Amino acid sequence: MKFTLPSLPYAYGALEPYIDAQTMEIHHNKHHQAYINNLTAALERFPEFQPTSVESLLIDLPAVPSDIRTAVRNNGGGHFNHSLFWQIMKPNGGGEPDGLLAQEIKKSFGSFAEFQELFNAQAKAVFGSGWAWLSVDKDGKLVVTGLPNQDCPLSYDEEPLMGLDVWEHAYYLKYQNKRPDYISAWWHVINWDRVEENYRAVIE
Ligand code: MN3
Image (cartoon, rainbow, N blue to C red; front, side, top):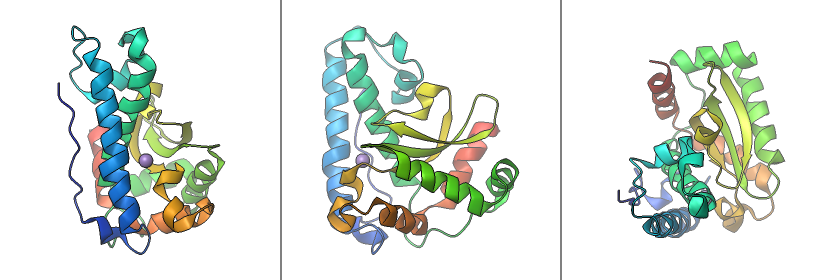
């Protein structure tokens, strides 16, 4: 199984002014690539252990040889999480979702505004590095969580629909210490069509 860097579905500068081109380039080309390199290096130590996908690794971390389990958790998570992150953003994105997901958000959280408030609170509350997530739990319910480092909802029996990277490398060049400003800006680049697709893939 060979892991490769997915190309971005838009140019590095396409999410300006909300996310700057230099951050996007370093984030994609250096950080994401490093997770792939480190994941590959870890798995090369156990050639008899052949995963079928990065998802399968994260869904069943206890099945990973214990010597490389932490490396797979961090770097496999890094690869999966960033691959999803690039897809759920787009230029001229933002606004509010419609369709099935919008109905479910309303049912689960009361309103889009209440969902957004909860998601923002989780993103702000991540201590140090991590992500905020909207996922579907094992009972089919929408859940908003904050997870540390590169932990992936898949490892918690949840299907991630969208995630916000709040590692400093995701925003520091433009926003410095002002994580809340980055979080507010990010809502302008969400690709709701893609998040809706992710939701349908889980429930259908
Ligand atoms: Mn990142």
